[in-house]
Image (cartoon, rainbow, N blue to C red; front, side):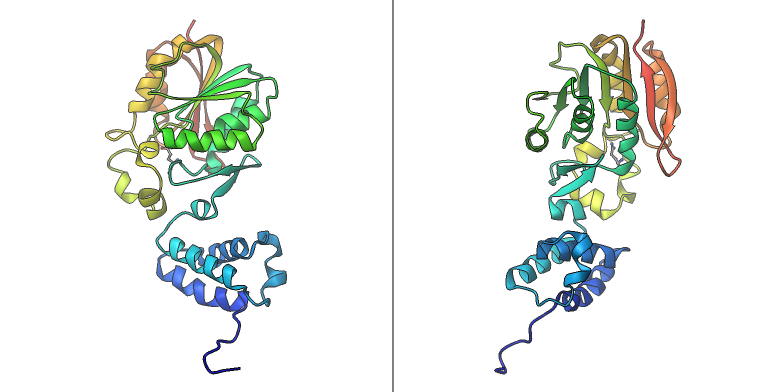
Length: 285
Ligand code: GLN
């Protein structure tokens, strides 16, 4: 071997170098993230990485891994680096233009699917994760996804395409109910709800890399609920359901807003950590 040549780097070597780098960037689960990113760089399923850790890294895999680790050290979320994320058992494209679908939001999908529906509206659809999960498991249903962000809707449309749902899911740019004329038997939303005061305390992954407009309406965090509570009654069929994700301390305030608009509030559902997460209500009248 010439002096200029470097001995080949194995996957295990690359991991050993990367983990302290991620730890130094303040990432708690540095080892897990490094493994997931290495598996992706090597083109392997994460479950097969261990088998291949002693393999020499191909130059392309090494370059991809270095770039993944640099992005992660800047606190970019793993889902954005990989470009996709599993939600409700389905794989969704994720980019910096959309909120990374979170496991606690699956509570909302579970509630939506607990009763049949024909026509569903998702306000602030983002990646489309909620709407498209609902449609996948309610095969006769159709739905609309509304978002203020054309870039987010481009991601939602890609996801609809990948899931074979283009015929049943329609998307439109809009501000809540502004351009809507239809009636639905289910309205769902995970709107921006973080208060202005809470924003500085968010993890860098969220604060620096996810779209602000999907996270916070500013102020007391309730403006989206005010808009939804004011308009949902006119767009729900008799007996129609409204399901809203909330921040864990917002249950009482959101239920009050809904009652003030004539909704019957059914209950408050908890996520897997026991925090209040979803308000369920029925259309007025
Ligand atoms: N649930 C998200 C978070 O806690 C916030 C998304 C939202 O405001 N809907 O980061």
